[in-house]
Amino acid sequence: MISIITCVYNQSKYILQTILSVLDQTYKNFEYIILDDGSIDATTEIIKSINDPRVKLIRNEKNLGLTKSLNIALSYATRKYIVRLDGDDIMVPNRLAVQLKFMNTNPEIALCGSRAILINEVGSQIRISDSVPKTDEMLKFLLWDNCLIHSSVIFRKKCIEAIGGYNENYVRTQDYNLWVDFIKKYSIACLPYFLIGWRDHSENISTLKCQEQQDFALQISLEFLRYTFPELINIPDGELIQLRKNHMQWFRSKDSPKGKEKILIEIKKRL
Image (cartoon, rainbow, N blue to C red; front, side):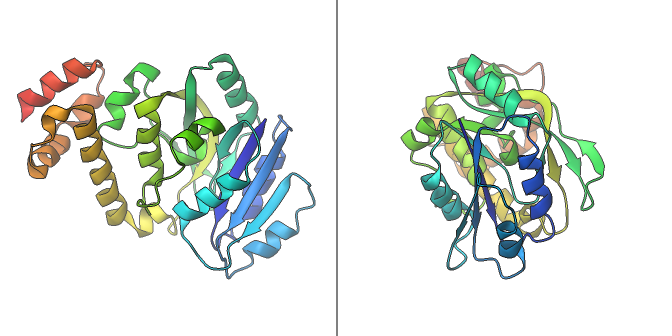
């Protein structure tokens, strides 16, 4: 039923913990596709040492980057559902069982994430992730920023195939762009359960490429605003950027509007 996808590059420090957390799942009917994006450390050897037929290693001859690697890994997936997991994160033992039950029970949902426990380099808890938006609030959140954790999601294979996979124009924040592509056609959700350990360390892409990540996220947000509200197409970037900066937290609040029409009214008030 499930294809799990992990793309790694020089993750020898964490990849074994990641793999073991997958093999320790209470739900056992999965294939685990690990794509090594040209690692030059011991990552490949660690993966090869795992003696489990569900683990399938694919290796790029050269480093292609995460977005292209994700699409390559997707092409090897054979199951109904795709689950994502980064090579430095871990799953809690019932993650697959919980998300699979939710997806089977809610056929109208195409993609579903979860909350996370943030862990440090040695696996100790730092804090927990923020509360998650309800399904009917997802659009409101995604207009302004990424509100899902990449490692936490499960989605239907037929749906990501329908939207053409990950957009390879986005070498960063490809996950945020994927959520936007999904919500243009489908319903997406996020469970309030803590189903992954999301590792925070000095070698995270979000740390090493922080400004680049922010620039790509801003581009996605502005494009999605204009897609959702064509009335904003002629509004200069500067004005929309200022709106986003000043009111992003307000639109995330409990008191902010949910419906598209109400959101547009409030946007126009603030321009």
